[in-house]
Image 1 (cartoon, helix red, strand yellow):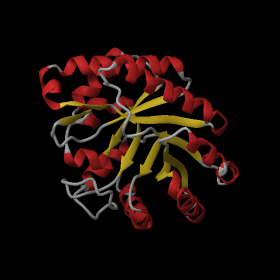
Image 2 (tube, helix red, strand yellow):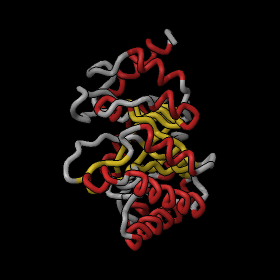
Image 3 (cartoon, one colour):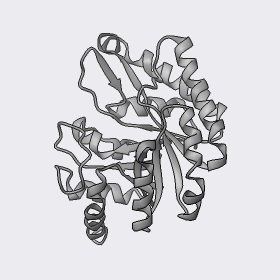
Image 4 (cartoon, one colour):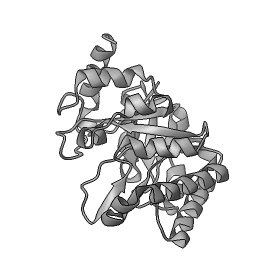
Length: 253
């Protein structure tokens, strides 16, 4: 299990400084929103290699796998293909993504329609790029638009349609605190990445372990999964104290 942190391009230097300071952090999951950002990332290739870091990419929040307009949906497939090509010399370990969003009244009437659209999107992408794809649980406030992927059923449906070792599940503890479901029990074998953060059960505020309502019992369940990557998706000021809490919990597992 590699311990990592989350970053965006604007704060990657701060993230790299943390990796220098805390040698056990060997992974960065980096959010990339534009193709132009790929060139900027290459500026850090040498230090990433020097620190022996692996990289995962979090795709844009705007990406919508269940987009009903085929032309727009295909443009997202092309975007990811281009991104994969631009980053080919950085040995990206995975692309992580949210399933997307649908008008709430349409989603309530026919959820499986949009899950089928997502399934086709992921099948096409899975065939086009030679890299691991990871789909992440989210939460939804159920306004005019609702996020897909806030219950385990959505992912069980997709994994029943796509049989691929390159399609993973990313379990986000913070999102689960807001929209809780049995992800660990139902998707155990597909969980390769964990986003670990705490919050108050209302807002996804990405605070350190022990600063919100995330229980020690649940953290133990997460650690028993032994994911490939455990990403601390938290305020950088909380990383050291969170690692200390994790160490004490690991001794009890």
